[in-house]
Structures are given as structure tokens and as C-alpha cells.
Amino acid sequence: TFPDALLFVLSAFFRKIFILQLVGLVLTYNFTNCDFEKIKQKYQKTIYDDLKEYMNGTRSTQFNSTVSCNNRADCLAAIERLTFRPPRGCASLAGEAFALRTDATFTLQCPGYSSAQIHNTQAAKKRKKREVTTNKCLEQVSQLLGLWGRFCRTFRKQ
Amino acid sequence: MTILGTAFGMVFYLLQVVSGESGYAQNGDLEDAELDDYSFSCYSQLEVNGSHHSLTCAFDDPDINSTNLELEICGALLEINCLNFSKLQEVYYIKTKKFLLIGDSEICVKLGEKSITCKKMNIVKIVKPEAPFNVSVIYREGANDFVVTFNTSHLQKKYVKNLMHDVAYRQEKDENNWMHVNLSGTKLTLLQRKLQDDAMYEIKVRSIPYSSDYFEGFWSEWSPSYHFRTPETKRAEEMDPVLLTISISSFFSVALLVVLACVLWKRRIKPIVWPSLPDHKKTLEQLCKKPRKNLNVSFNPESFLDCQIHKVDGIQSRDEMEGFLQESFPPQPEESEKQRLGGGVQGPNWSPEHTVITPETFRGESPLECPAGNGSACDVTILPSPRSPESGKNGPHVYQGLLLSPGTTNNILPPPFPLQSGILTLTPVAQGQPILTSLGPSPEEAYVTMSSFYQNQ
Image (cartoon, rainbow over all chains, first blue to last red; front, side, top):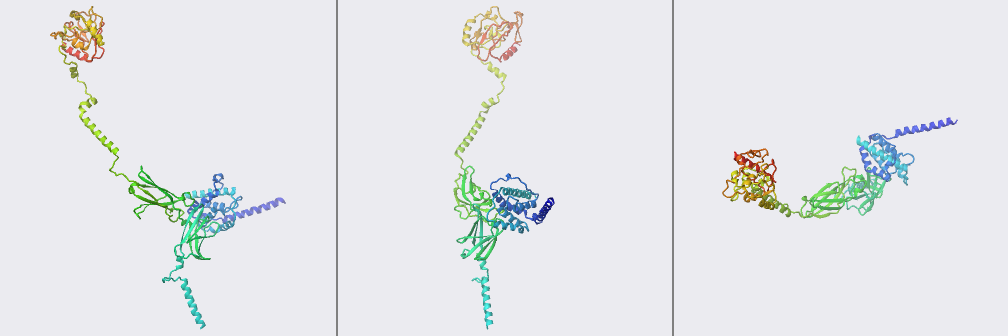
């Protein structure tokens, strides 16, 4: 019957989602052992200017802050997720200068990170045309600015 | 034989190859001359042309033949793996936006496809800032100092913003005696007293990335020099002539004031500042001045027996007085005895008209003047006092609380001499009124009264 079939499909669907979440948890890098001071310095000297340049005059207060983090490692994980796994509406930011610098920073300052994101970086390099800056992407970059600022403030207290 | 020849050939070949690869130099030193020949140095300049960066490299040995040599950079690049340098004479350079600015890059010297030597470099650690410009020096006369200002293009850059500046200055005649001042801003103040007067100076500036910053590197080129001359300054001993004149005149004025104060202290200043209290004896002496000739002043009433005494209770004008005196002073000594100056003692024939006596006439010319030789008769001892209607002729006469003896009632006393130059008027006085009245205050009344009191006693 139709309800039985629907139940079967939905259960398979939710099962897949559950498995993917588990995989994501397992494969997410643990940023606890990173050199936070050097990451902060690289962000302040290079990545911040790239993010501001990407926003290109758009005020960050235009968007609501929907993502937050509790500690340094959590902040870096959120930054990594938003930078290299953007939600729908913004295809990818991995090819942008700030994303490449973020990747390089994590690779240098976080032991064991480099192998996780190189493939994404390589894929971004092959792209010939730049992604059109959509409003969704601007919102995402605004969230990134908030996360990086939170990371610096959290780092200052600890 | 063949084997032996082959063996020797191989030996010689090996010797040649070994000697070639080991870099056997002509001087006999077994050095790796190929690597040293291709050593190079690089520096980077970020945002030198808008958002474009530059990387410049050159071989350390200027004599090297770099005709077929190329340089390549790989790693720490955005979106690409490697970049090739361009060549301009003996210098290799790249202009690009694709520096990652994070992590190390590898720069290799390539001869064809073969890398001869490579070096790892971090682009952010070999930054050479652009040279400062617009150096200027302004002299501030009020502050006695020189303000040095200059400009740098890094103030508007994104990455290399924090620089340390080195300001060097010297006197032009001192060839190598450069003074150095380090500062992080673009403004410097030089005190005039630390510079020579009336001398020409040369000044220039260079910059380097701040050592504690993320970016590091080398000194920039020197800015163009600026030349300025220090002014002549007046000697310390020379003072402004106007100020000197004012100082000297003030000193002398003060000295003069002090001398004058000392000299005139007793005579002029002290009486004003600390006036002395009047001495009653001296005051009395002043009051009772030596009379003129033929004017006897006495407090003995018997001296004035021949004098006509009129009551005086007011002061009028002089002209009026003179006329009045001519009319109202009849030469009747008997009648004058009956006339009293005070109220209450008044005869039935008392004229109500006023009689005016001036102080002059009163003293020397008045009818009160006693004829010569009758000075004793003109002595006046006491004034008549107002008598109540009830009291009889022979009753005691009281004047201001003093008791008159009967014998003195016939004596007529002139009114007290007012010191002020006023005119006394003679008016009829009602009974009971005081004998004498005057327009002005007469503080000497008390003295006269007291003296007459003692006389009577």
C-alpha cells in the first residue's frame, strides 16, 4: 500500500542522513591541537582583508548572525564548515582568496589537517569562471566574519 | 689487450667525470663553485602597483653569465602551482596578485628544464617597503625647534602598514657624521639647541617593516634628501633693548621712591598715615592767639565794664552787618549794662532789632572794644546767663549751670570768640532761651567755660 511504501522510502532516506551525519562526525577534523595564536595572526593580517574585500562595501549588519561557536576549536570547525561546505544558494567559496588562505593557514598550523581539504582546493583551481556573488554568498561570508571575530575574542580571553 | 685498454679508458673517463662534477677550481680549491655561482637574493614589495605585488631576485655574483638561466617560484600561490620570473638585464622579477602570503615558496634557478639550485623563501619575510617621500623641515621660531615631516605610501596599504622609520641628518660639512632617529610615525621634532647655529643640514628617511609584525624584511631605499639652514641665534647675554631700558628705569624709580619715603617720612607721610591726636593745651594756645595791639583778651569781667556787649545768636553777611552796626550800637554804657546777650535777662527797652558783630569788629573794632587804658574794665570773666522771669534782679544768675555772683551781673561779657570766620548776629531772645547761639559749632565753648569757671573760683 501507499503508506507502507512511503514509510519504507522515508526510513531509508532518514537512515542515509543518519549515516552521513555519523560519517561527517568521524571525518570532521579536531582543531584542538592547532596553534591558535598563529592562526589569529594570519587571519588579522591577510584573511580579514580578503573577507572585507569580498563583501565589497556590504555592511555585515545587514545579515543576522545565525551561527555561533563556544570555544576556539569549535569556532575553527564552524569556519571550516562554512568556508568549504557552504549551504545551498552559494555553490562554493573554496576558490576565493580568503578560502585558499584559510586552507593554507589550517594546513600550516593544524597538524594533520592538510590532507583533508587539498582536493577541494584543487577543484577550485580548475574552475575557470568565478562564481557569481549571490546574496546567499554574501550572507555566508558575513557569518564567517562573525565566526572569525568570535574566535579572536575567545582567544583573547583564554 | 682489449680488456686492458678498456680498463684504462674507464679509469680515465671516471677521473674526468669525477673531476668535472666535483667542481675543481683553477685555484686548486675543492669547492662547489657551481652552487655558489648561482646564489641569489630576493625581496618582495606588496601592493606596489594597486593590488599587484612584486618579487625581485638577482644573483649575488654580478659576473655570472645568466643568459640561459631562468627563475621559477612554486608554492604559496593562489590558484596556481608555479610562476616564472621575467628578466630585465641582470634582474629577475614577477608582478602578480597571486601570492598567498601564507607559508613558504620555493624559488629555483633553472637551466632549461633542469633546476640548478633552489631556495625556500617566505614572501612576507622578505618585504622591502617603498621609499618615503616629501621630506620637509619647518622651523618654529616660538618653540625654537624644527618639525620634520614625510610621507609614505604604506599608510594606504592593506598588508604592510606598520613600519619603522629611520631619519638621518648631518651637517653638510661633516661627511660621515650622520645622526639617526627611529620613529614609527611620520613626524619628528628636532630641538634647535641640539643643532649648530647658522649651518646647512641634510636630512633623509628610510623605512623597514616593524620587527614584531607579521611582515618582515629589509630597509627601503633612502628618500630624496632635504636641505635646510639653521638660523642665527642671539647670544644669551644680549637682551632686548626695550626690556633693558624698562628694567633700568623701573629700578631707579623704585630706588627714588624709597629715598623719598625715608626723607619725608616724619614730616609729610607719617602725619597723614598716622595722624597725632590733638593736644588740648596746644589747641587752646592756638585759639587764644596773641591779640592785636589795643585788643585786650581777658577772662576778667571787670575789664569789660566799659564795653557794650550785645547778645549774639546768629551769623549774617558782612555788608548787612556793617550797616546794622552803625544803626544799632548807641554809645550808652548805662543802657548797655541792661542789655544781656542771653535770653531771660533783658531790659524793657531791649530793641528787637538784630545787631550783627563780625569777628573782626568783635576782636578789634567792635563796640566791645574797650578804650585804651581801661583794659581792666574790659576784662570779661563770665557771660550773663538766661534768667527766669521768676527770679529777681538780684537773684543768682546761672549760666549753663554755673552760678554767678551778684557782683558780676553788671558785668557784661562778650560772646565767646568763635574761631571760625563767621558773623555773629544779635537777636532778642525769649526768656529761658540760652544766652548765646551761633550758626556754627563752637567746640571752644567748653574751654572758655571751664577757664571762666576756674577764674570765678
